[in-house]
Image 1 (cartoon, one colour):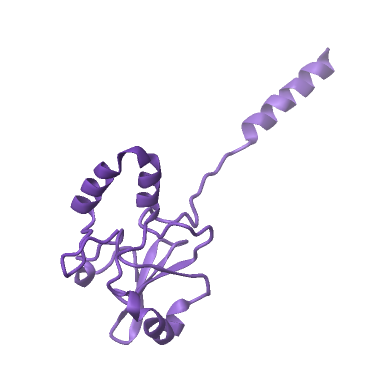
Image 2: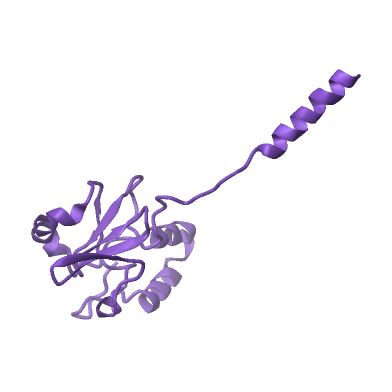
Length: 152
């Protein structure tokens, strides 16, 4: 009887000792591009900056130095991350290859056709009501290019 009591207490103690830690390291932001399972960095051609998905920080050039911050500086305040183009880069320290990235991805600077994770989920959850999506998206995310053309 004593043996059963001791083993029962040991099982209860071990159950309480388990800890569930849920750390969201590497979760992509909702404004990230849809369709990628693994992302370390985004390159943002419109502002020539990077976003570190793991650390949730922006990396941009200030004069001759690369600066890391939690928020974009004021000069980028008008950038809408949901509709600006993002390039997935999984190599370490991508800013070291910035000139190559700038040359290769410059053509995407004002391309606002890339679908974000949020908008892809919204579209799939509301397939029956495409008209509502168009109205909401147009009002929310500057869905017109600089020439006034609709971009989806």
